[in-house]
Image (cartoon, rainbow, N blue to C red):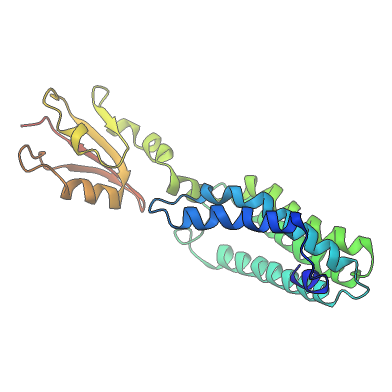
Length: 241
């Protein structure tokens, strides 16, 4: 893409507009103290425009050396990822593996997808001078992104949301208990009219912050840790004193 712009240095109004469009949200949200990954989404449309213009100009050139080098590099990384995934899942005990019981098909599909990505990239490098090579190169990441929805390990989902952890320990939660799974629960746990138990399901770091930030005027009773996982804690607080 950069090579394409270097060969055609004149920047049109669309290029200038897309450049400012991508730069503005990036700088604005980078300066924000509370950043989320979705804040970068407004930068994607102008970046797509810039990438499209740059690639179109580069591919119009008679030689495509950089394209071939990029395709070979991408293919090598994908095949290395395939080998690493196979070694990791076959050579480690279940507690260390990314995929759990019943997810054999997921990492097999992930391995096949990565291997196809690498193969398509190498084929595209060999056909860099014609349109078929371009289509092969673009189809590789599309195939991978389509399969991502099906090959994500359940552990990664559990790490981001406590739903599975709660369901696994539902029998340990009394039916009459109040259940919270938020951060910053000090006020909720210390309301004057609270008479029953409170069950907290939250990340371990947030749980430690909750205990540390208890109000000194009306402290909570010591929590009883019911269950733990690498990511979440299920604790029960008795009635407020």
